[in-house]
Image (tube, rainbow, N blue to C red):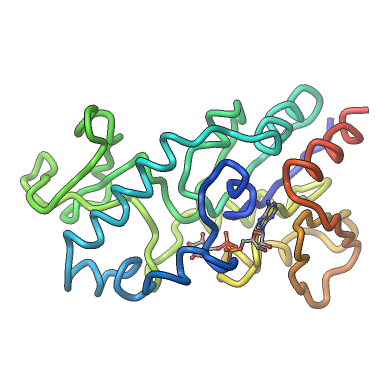
Length: 232
Ligand code: APR
């Protein structure tokens, strides 16, 4: 029984129909990060930001886990698997993974703008539309916001994520351009001697990392194949 730590990004959900950010036609190709994924953007035009996340939440809830998500869940038959994801969809959970740490928040959740500890599942706020709007309030009467880490905001789960990486026996990276810190620095918390693997059709540059090999494949092909080997 090994401890396998997996860092995933938008690429693992691409084949479930959810857009990535920096690929051709990705979200940041047609939207401005500053206006839609920042505290300043939320202050400037809260309904625009809420609508952006309402749309992405609807898409994520309609999407289905793909063969890559399912293979990672199967890996738990034989190993301890810790998923660290930058994704805000719940496809890992719906595939059956039991340990999922969301670095950048979760579309399913919304929280109070007055008390960040007041976090709600969207199902309990509006089970019909799964939306929040200007005027949707928490129990204190304050505006609700997406439970998402916006650019410029702290990544509260980073310490927990780094601690998991330090105890990895094998480190797998799937579907992330490794362009956003601090998530992209996690690979440097994995002990040098531990084997690391990146699965991505366009392998990102990862300077100065030892014991690293890559599989230049889409997630739904590369991940099941690797999992099959790890389960043997
Ligand atoms: N299978 C595997 N990887 C894929 C696939 C696929 N089918 N399609 C695309 N990819 C890869 C791309 O080659 C790229 O390396 O997924 C990666 C997507 O990179 P980004 O769009 O930058 O997404 P990500 O790395 O998750 O972004 C990190 O940036 O905008 C913020 O908070 C947001 O969590 C996000 C963070």
